[in-house]
Image (tube, rainbow over all chains, first blue to last red; front, side, top):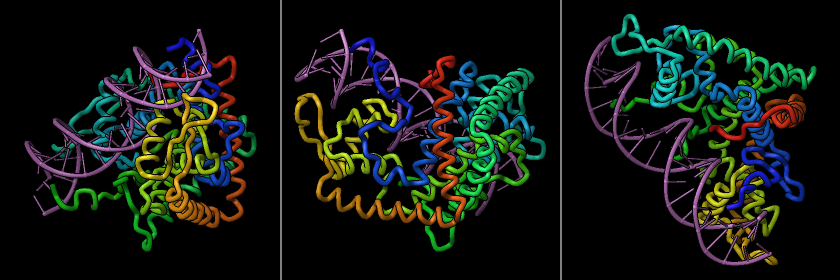
Length: 177
Length: 177
DNA sequence: TATTGTTATACTCTATAACTATA
DNA sequence: TATAGTTATAGAGTATAACAATA
């Protein structure tokens, strides 16, 4: 295969840009598609801003949750992140394998672990959090006064969509069957 | 395992709701986290609204693109969706296996396929599009006049984040290494 | 040489199911 | 009987690399 295999692509993989000449039809009008495009772009920019840590947005979120809630149980971590127990396990395995977190016996329940940042984890996370905060500040700065309204709108959207999908007359289908 | 294994969970899997008693720290202030929460909620509501079709948002988008661009090449489909060639192949395989789409020889290039909806695909997609449009309209209706501004803000956000991650002085890191 | 699509493979994410130990 | 965590497995999703046919 040629050396320029992916370098010559007009759109690099991962980047969801409108391709000239392609008709997006109904997609352009959908709120859901706009959210997807925005999240895609944010995701790529997050990776750029945190390249030296090699941490995904989700793993970053898990670290922050452990940091702010010392002794957090795996199960509660999963709930806060919308994950199954087994997913919380994998996430915790990663955090401990990377040396960010340690499992200690949870007081009062011999079945459970409490999660705690290690000393090194605290140090690394502090720098990582600063990088993420800078990344987010840059976005907000570029958005100007629109930024705050956008964040409020997103929070309302999450609430509205949740209400819709969990309304009593709707049958929530949790997972792809 | 008990019958109620996941039914008793306060937060069903997939749903990213704020858990009382958990401190989210910096996450609550991040634009990126607000986008993630919104997308998570929208995703679940999309699945509820389109349950009878068993189509993911991405597969839906691919179907719309083929529908609006008869004869679309696999490669261009991939570009429009931010996918590698191999991803566009899998997506196309799925669309043809489900009977939505057929590959025909592309005129003028014996290497390429042109993608076309089948007659049955057109019929099914028409109903699916109506369901998705209804789902989106319900969201916009619940948001009221905030909806249009939110959509515009999301489009601007996608643009700003893309500009940031592809700026010449930044090194874009496309994929997780 | 470059491009289109394919095959084979691997890794991440996240689910289900069955299991252990404890409550 | 229910809960916390684990193990094993499966299925999306998406990448990389090497390949064939064509341009």
